Image 1 (cartoon, rainbow, N blue to C red):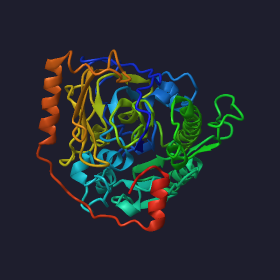
Image 2 (image 1 turned 45 degrees about the horizontal axis):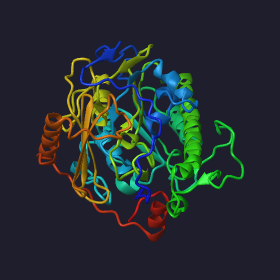
Image 3 (image 1 turned 135 degrees about the horizontal axis):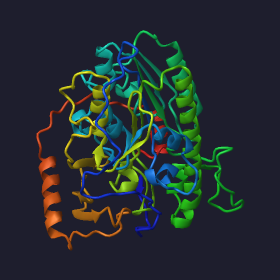
Image 4 (image 1 turned 45 degrees about the vertical axis):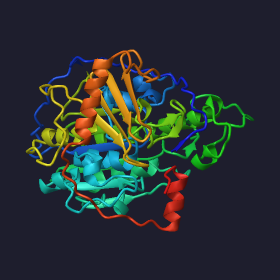
Amino acid sequence: MRRCRDRDRTQCGWLLLLIGGVATQLGCSELDPPDRGHGRPPDVILVMIDTLRTDHMSLFGYPKPTTPEIEEFAGVATDYRRAYAQSSWTAPSVASLLASRYPRELGEHKAPSKLHPDTRTLARVLGDHGYQTEAVFTNRYISTRYGHEIGYDRVQEHLSHGAMVTSQQVTDAALLAARESDRDRPLFLYAHYFDPHYDYVLQPGFELGPKAWGHPYDRNVVSFLAQTLRADLDEEAMRGSRRNYDSEIAYTDHHVGRLLSGLRALGRFEHAVVVVVADHGEEFLDHGEIGHAIALYNETVHVPLLIKRPGQTHGERHLEPVSLLDVAPTIVALAGLPREASHRGKSLDGSRAPSPVFTSTFYYSEDEIAVIAGRYKAIIDYRLGTFELFDLLVDPREQHSIADRKPRVAALLRARVESWNEGRFQLKRGHDVRLTDREKAIMRSLGYAE
């Protein structure tokens, strides 16, 4: 993800439902206690979809049918409409979700390190309480190479590179793990879907519209490196990227649907905690960038989050900002387990008071932090020396900073960012990972600079 030559702030059709400042919920009750009808804690299924921005999901009003399977799942789950990742790229975001710690506490900075072996990951916490723990990895930053095997009984890896397609393998491997698991033990299954990430591949059967044959930007595969080398990146150039990206989402959604259907057939769905979430989104010149990892605008940090409680049979919608730090504590609570002392987040029940959400990106340097509080969002870029304030209720695409028109709000949120940035963090650094030349080349092809 790189700075693009064209700095124009382009329009990209955000279709979000945002409610500001008030703790409003539609039909959302407190977390139900775990279903004990099976004599053991509920299974936990965590589905992670890499690089999925909310406004390209038909669940959020996108006009193309990109996510029909997730929409069906939303009919029996709680949809947290305003969920925010702790960073705008995979390594810090997923590590934060699984450990309920901020990225800086886990050593996830410019070059992500291998997780410290003592890290209390969700797999370790659940495993300590008798869970059988299984994982399917596809992202190289979320793999045994970076210590993400901590707490798992078994890990299956299908590590993606370039135009490699893996969603079918993820579903097949995850269902195999579920079929082979011990029925007398609760199951924790983590499945990481990677296909919406670069490279963007037009998936046969999931084109979602006609292709403009002969147009220079209409290609079956759009690679990150090829696109960043173009001197004429503009809205027209993004057309083919968006089309392929939508196709990748629809293809992944199909295989997520296969997974959920397979779990139903195995009897591991109705009484399970099932979470569908993304680690970050993607930018298509919305603010002059392509890809992710650099900026903290909504296209890269506003993510889908759906959680099904054990026995839940109807959909609910939550409209207050929440953090992915809250996912692990919520799972632990729904499993009927004691709260984990190391968790920064809080369980997402109806009794919690609204609190600000902090997100940051340290990819190139420790330079950018954002806070979301009610209807407002502030972003401080320390490297560029800029401060922006947005009213997400009237400007969800974050095109017009109102810092000069709302000085009191700006001062309050700036103070919150400064306080958080200077806070006391319990640092637990991992070990640096020395990549081979081949690994470096693969990471560059996926948009990560060394």
